[in-house]
Length: 217
Image: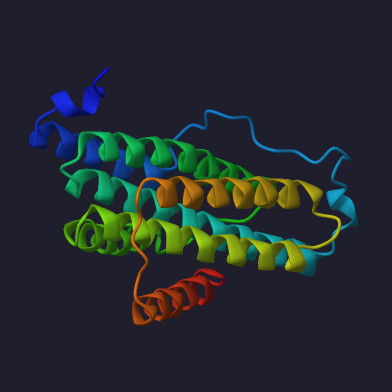
C-alpha cells in the first residue's frame, strides 16, 4: 500500500507541519506508549533539594533534545521527495513524540519546568533539518544516524549523573536510550551515508551548546 502521505499536497504537508510544531512546543502531544516506570517505586522523599534540581535540569535537557528531534524529523519529512522515506521520518517523529511527552510529564512530577527557549530550539533544529534534507536523502539519513548516536551517548551520561533514588527518571532515560539506538540502526539500514568528520565535530559542538544552555534556561 502506498503511504497516505504520498497523496497529500505540499500545502497540506506544510499545514500539518505547522500543527506538529505547535503541538510539540505547547506540550499538546500525547504519547502512544505509557510512561516507563521503575519496577521498584521511586521514593522521591529521600531525594534532597539539590538532587531534585539536578534531576529537573537533566530532564529539561532531555526534553529540549526531544523538541529538537521533532523539529529535525518534521523538516526531513518535508524536504524529501521519496514517499517511503517520508513515511519513515514521520513514523520516527511519532515514536520520538513519546519521549517528548514522557520528559515533560517527569518535569511536572519533579516540580520543574521546560526550557524557556523551547520555541527557539524548535526553529533552530528545524532549520538544520531542512539543510540536511536538501543535501539529499542518503546524507539526511546519515545525519539521523550521527544524531541518534550522539544522543545515545548523551543519555548514557545522564544515567551516570541522575540521583540513585530517582528511579523513574532512570527508567525513562533508559527506554529513550534504547529507542535512539534503534532509530540509528533503522536509518543505517535505509541507506545512510557516512558524514564527514568535520560535520560530526560541528554537530557535537552545537549539542554541547544546547545542553549547557538548557540545563539552566
